[in-house]
Length: 504
Image (cartoon, rainbow, N blue to C red; front, side, top):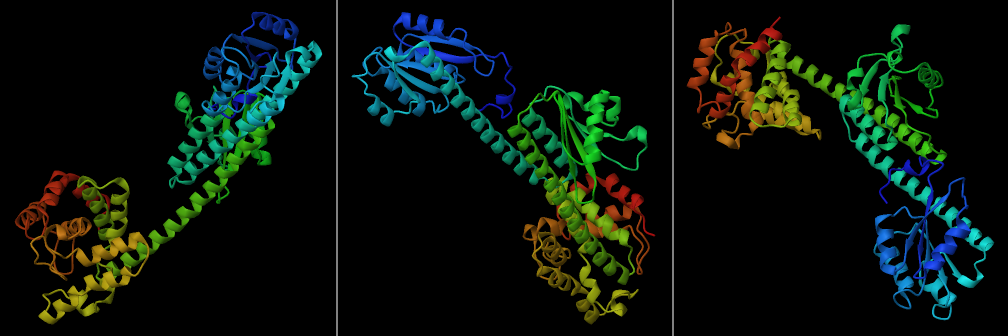
């Protein structure tokens, strides 16, 4: 049964209950229709289907799984054809909801106690004992049982959908994708035919813009940026007002509004138009989903705060290293952005390239451990000073290498490798070619490219052509030839970073 979990509560009041009569005697069909023709259960009538053989009955049950009651004869093609159909319905089709009332005119061939204990049937009647009154009572009991089973089944499916949808939204790590995922699942769970909107509440806005629409399902995407008051009727706006005022959900006959709030006390409203009337159980399921949205939203913001704190620490560390060497903070920013540009060009996915952008600024963090007299010496270093100066690569790797954070582990690897050369002539380990990690090769090129175009204590910025000539000269020596090609193909974008983030 794959029905949406609201289906059981959205059946129209005049939708009939399906009853299948399976009997090889035509007069049994006629009498049954006559006796039950005016029958009503919960104000809904019956509609009758007829099967004159066990095979025909099985085909109907298979093609119409919403049959509520099966009135089944035992003896048809064979003496136990009806019992075999019971087994196939329960085992092959997995249909445990249809209520099966076994009717027999030959109880000796299918003793009641044996049948009840061996087969999953719901009632056993001899045809001779089925007066009109008893027949109607039997149908009342069967339909009540079917209704309750369907309520339980739909609630179970609804809970499973809520769990799956909740797991999906808990996996999101960015506001945009989180909100889109919430809207998608809410629209699917509610099966509303109208508008589904997400309004982010800004308490600083004017009264004319109280409910700005941040997201809408695809048929109504053009509504994004407008205010809900421009779109919804006054009665629906009253529901939004009530949800915001009371910080609670509002369920009306033709729409509903879900309220949730994040860890920063930012409020949002989810509006579902033409959602249809829903029952108490399904309303609770929607409330559970909304609660999960709130928890996930709070977790999202808490996670973002943690990430922001970690990134702020990274920038402070990188800035401290650059300040000691009298270089600007914008140098490390540009190196990170250029590394991301080259990483994407080299085939990294978005996440890996972003991590490279965040880790690359720490490539020279080890300079914190180099004495000022050597670090900022305007002239050439002595052999002894060169050894000390070069130790910053290992110092940086040691500082960051013990961290369990993948981002800082990446930064440690970059610290250790960004002075390695393609031909093996670099330091500290003399690595060669692709033995040097792609991240290390990228940051090596990004660092030199930006440094050559920047002012240093020992030089003025180089002009564009001189930088290009140097990089060509060092291709295959210092730098990965493929990365040089990628940089030259994006030269204007690389130079634009210096214009966007100039040295102070």
